[in-house]
Length: 114
Length: 114
Image (cartoon, rainbow over all chains, first blue to last red; front, side, top):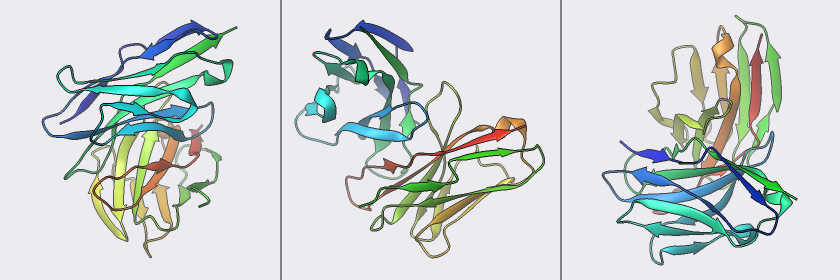
């Protein structure tokens, strides 16, 4: 079975400051890792994904994430946030074989303040 | 590529009524997924289709829930005898079968059971 833990339910940050949203996972098999963003009353939009290869993944809107296999982490970072980044961020894990469902964390609310 | 669409976007119903939601996936995608998201939580997997075959169902999918994808294109999710606990956002996602698949989500249908 897989699980995803997002350690922070809320992260307040000032505009133009850097931010890191933490994600840890557990799985007994190889996984794919994703970060999705959800704006109020909308569906999920893919930010970035790790499938294989380079452990540093760049996504949309200036976000990046680093896969760390030994620490089973996939933390999301942005060097300078904007007010428009205020949203809910979800980390998800999928298996590369077998079960096709994604397992999501409970989400981190990023609140960017002026 | 018009993205995944879902209808209706909002549904208010009384307890005990039946409701049906529709999902139209991205046209070339042969995999379709349903998830449920309650307030403050990440999406939870309900069921998955490959073409018209329903290949996986979660234990969350009680016998009051039924999903179909009759021609391998759009899908419907029906909830019979709705309960207040069914109030949630119902998300549909689709993907293209390959070794590395990404699920693209629709805007969701928000259900409120009174």
